Length: 293
Ligand code: PMP
Image (cartoon, rainbow, N blue to C red; front, side):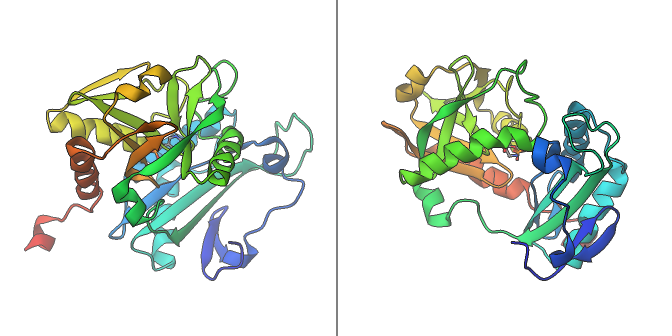
């Protein structure tokens, strides 16, 4: 990934993709003092850019650092990165981290860095897989108690258990893994939120110890706009056999139906398919009156 052509926005300027490097004694690498975003551009526009930038800044604050650029500067930098890379449908990855001045748990005065990379990225899961639904393993690791980890921050350190769980699932032939939370309730997949359907009603876990995804919030609004009943609540794994549909939501995953979680099977039905289509319509750039003429 580090040998591509193009440029990366790095601490306020564009550098050659291959030269966007950090020192091995970077605090972010040793102590996970790093936060990031995942954004998608559709038709040349970054979907919900402002919400992603605000979350990035907040993620840093939760870890105790201030990103040294305003939201306006970060938004403009994201847009310019997309343009300089000549991308229309793409994925963007802003990442902020503590630098290398001090090496130890405490690094109060280390410089905070920010980089933004963009690349072409088709659907997270293969399109043919999306239609038949993806298969999820049950992860062994759980989402931690918010008193144990900064669960509202999109912090790199919180992804350690996601990568372990996803690798374990892939080794068994699954596309992804479903994680429970510290209490044993259904939480989320390794990089996406979860929704279920029972008797025409949508159920989704309360995001009290994991990210309330920007896609999740969009899909909740879309579901309510359609008049679907939606309940946010704690869901027990024993209930998995009682649902008829299941889908994931995330910037990368978009709306992806799930066909299996361990021994339980689901079929993408009317609600999953409607919301999948509504989401794909919602992410398209809004045409101005002039452009539409
Ligand atoms: N949970 C986790 C662990 C994630 O990595 C993501 C992707 N950022 C999400 C949920 C969904 O968040 P969003 O819809 O904002 O992409």
